[in-house]
Length: 232
Length: 232
DNA sequence: GCGTTCAAGACTGCATGCAACTTCGCCAGG
DNA sequence: CCTGGCGAAGTTGCATGCAGTCTTGAACGC
Image (cartoon, each protein chain N blue to C red):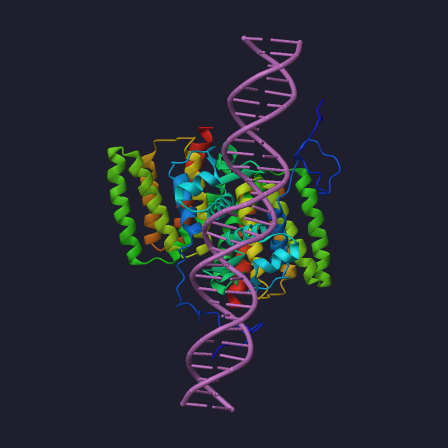
């Protein structure tokens, strides 16, 4: 008899009707962390905006504790900055830090492309080819928003293929902060060039040429860095 | 002249109009974070050890709140892992993750050495030369502990000279986790080889040869990775 | 009119309370 | 003796209370 009496267990109406074994439970703090993070990288929360713990707590209908946890994690990610007794604000990524971010991205994409080439699989080729094809079409059409998405997807695919969790995590962090920085510094154009450079990376990967892939990725990011540097 | 409200979007001058005010925070959470972090990387807290919030709170004579904040940050750093309702433990860095860490370190040191060479100053040369001299003596004497310190100091000096905050932060994170992983996997030896490789990096940096410095750093870390890979 | 001062409000950071969950030791049953 | 379930203790994660600090706004003096 498993259920003679379950005194203290309050059948609080969470949402799941019946789930005997606990599975992936989600803390409130985790949900809120991801929610605020998405708002920041998506631009819904602009740099400089205050991350008021009481306000966010009420908005998410929770107490201040999990919100505070989330804010702490965002600060640790570099997506927010806090000053003593003054709370946290969405980080302002200055020009210097943006350059530094790209210096890091240069190195990380360089390493990632090499690993992706070393761990090449036909499935990767298919996926990348699909992305490249659509990307070229989109670039010719001049759809900048979609261009950004496909650009991100291309790089994401490569860093998945690299199978290096540390590199992937670092690139995620860089990507988030770069997107945040781009809220201030919008550099448009160069879509076709990006596609061509992606193509070069793609070909080197598929050719099983790690060094070539690394060099192509390096050249790609380095050019983006130069573009950025010129616009500052 | 108190600004009535935050100017929404101001054509930022890109420089620091506000910096003078005090910034060094002395929050309890910050102190505790650094204290626990030091204990982890120094090996005082071994992988798998539970980070009990109540116990640490009593030890530091504070409430559980700042301790909890510190633990959250440690988890975000990858120095601890937590599972739902089971708290956090000092992270166990497995072989796969250690390899991944070195893949990342390879890229980061590669980039850092290049930047250090580009931003070379005579002061850097003096410092590195001093470290190298002592390092060679220590290596010949076979003092492994001191070797580790000097090795870390050498790389730290280079990444300071690179003046890239993002790269520096990432390398700090990698360094911490690598040290943590070394608590399980002790790979000794190769001291003299390391000194020779450091010497090569040093000479390339002082020669104002960014590519050479990058290559030398890459070869250095890559060899360490190979040594590690063989011992797994 | 303009600049200064000061008090009310709001928020941060730490302390503490509380329900639920996990773990461990103990005891009954086979 | 070993297996299996039960109860108690300790923790976790969220909620809430509280003092110190910063910001905002308006009254006040010049």
